[in-house]
Length: 218
Image (cartoon, rainbow, N blue to C red):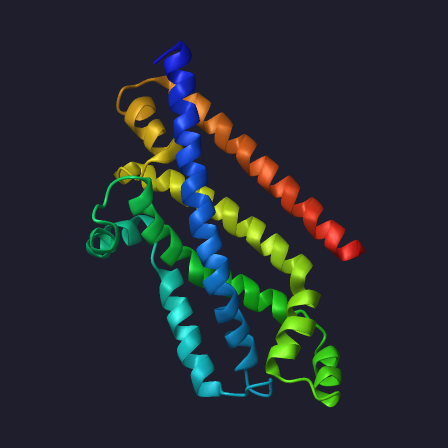
């Protein structure tokens, strides 16, 4: 593969990678953040104080994080076909990517929220704040810089996983590297995809660090 054909293939694969990572990251944050909040709030002595619920939630999260992603891709094939009608392509890869990312980000969110000073929560309770006010006005704002860094870690992890999904026809840069770089022994394609992935990781990490720093200053 040479010239414009290589450039066009790399562009299309990069767009597919952004599609997979963007959608799955958004879903993981929207579902993983509430799960992380519940893990914190149901801790013994915390706002909701429900140890048994906490144990169940923790077990579910740990189970979700136990599966290596390549195995999850295979195990979820029937579910993927049921949801999107196929197990091949970038849209099909969204199912395992999202299900792997939700428990991963839930733990990141839990860790970030646990770093919030408990004195702030106690002060909010003393002023008569309800659960939602404590979550929206104390926990999330105070944990926001750490959460931004957590989202950065999540996106980089999904970028790596999306490349792995290419091994089973998931689309994106990983699929291009496997199909042309490995199976057809095209070193140029393999080298180009690696360079693009390195650049993407560097840019994502740089942007995440800058955003978290700006939030801390404010």
